[in-house]
Every structure is written in C-alpha cells, then in structure tokens.
Length: 91
Image (tube, rainbow, N blue to C red; front, side, top):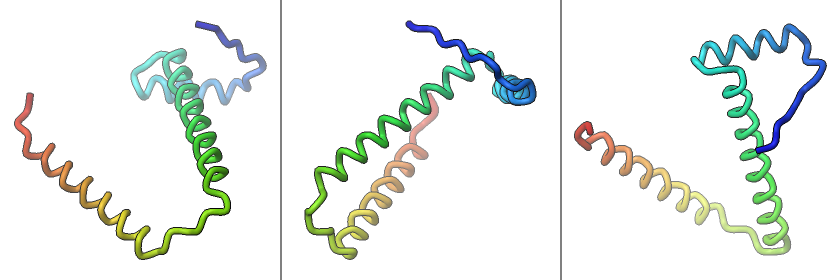
C-alpha cells in the first residue's frame, strides 16, 4: 500500500488532530487513515452523483407526489427494520 507524507502541517492543526485521535482512542495514523478513507468515499459518491445527473439530463422530472411517496416508503422501511432490530435478543 502506498505511503503519503504531508509536510508543513501547522503545529496547532497537528495538535488538534492528535487530540481528536486520542479522544477516539486511536493512533494518529489510524485517525488520518479513517479521514482519508472517508474523503475518498465522499469523492466516489460525488462522482456517482455526477454520472447519474449526466445520465438523467434531459429526462422529465419525477412529480413531487411520486417522489414523496418513495421517500415515505423508505422511511417506513427504515422504521420497520429498526423495530425488528430492537426486538432481536442480544447475541
């Protein structure tokens, strides 16, 4: 796996990041790796959204009533799943 070196980090920024890592009970390296992975995930999602927007460009919009119905169905499914998980005995 490649390594990354970051030069000229302001001391107050580094101290703040070290404190955040310590508060999580993890090393500075682990903390920064988590941050990099989160950023890479964010960039992947942004790229996927851009591809989807390009693919949908010129298509008619979904009516608000249909969009809201789908969002309500998703909310209901999430609530039902949360209830199922809450009823599950501890493992």
